[in-house]
Image 1 (tube, helix red, strand yellow):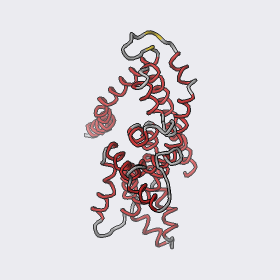
Image 2: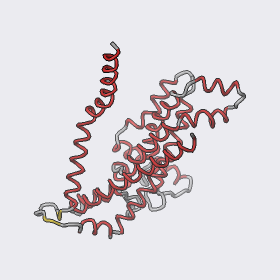
Image 3: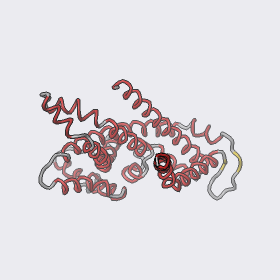
Image 4: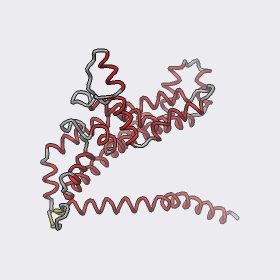
Length: 295
């Protein structure tokens, strides 16, 4: 009887590890094949409508010597950090608000989450209708007030792109953080109240420690998505003006479909994959160190 129970327990534990791998296997295989194809093309001199030939590391040398590529990396990193920070702050604030009990809370949650359900082209068109210099609602209103702000020029394009990204993706962070808030036991807040802790003290000593894992997941996922984000930078500003809002994804698109240089685009894509892996590893290191200090 005991042996049977032990065998069943081992089988259950084995199933807990194997089942997620089986579910993710098709996605992992597709992702692996895509990465392998990209890395293979990065060592090939491959231009559209021309025969391919061996290029060695020439594509990587061309990309690494390109000032345009390094500008796209710099903008991509800065834009990813600032948008993830703002998305996390806005999402955390919305999660705290929507975690409270009030009439119509379910409806409010659905409305707040609605921007994330919109597709990238819809968001880009919406911001064009709001901020377009010719007929944009906000642009025309500001012009009537004597403020000639052209949101798509070199001074404001990055700000407009950041606003659109925060509006579009903050609900995703809110959803993860709201789940984290709901996982904190109510007994901890009750014990803190009995000890005389005020709202701010409960937030510092109960909410933030309980939200550590949810914050980590939200930040890591958003950092990965925002660094290689293509749709909004391309549809809202097209990487312009003069490459001011061009990240690595837009750079790769231009190399592949404007310059028709698939080898260079593949090399840039491989480098972008390496940068993303480095960012994720760095975040895991910071997470582990913060955990060891808190313990």
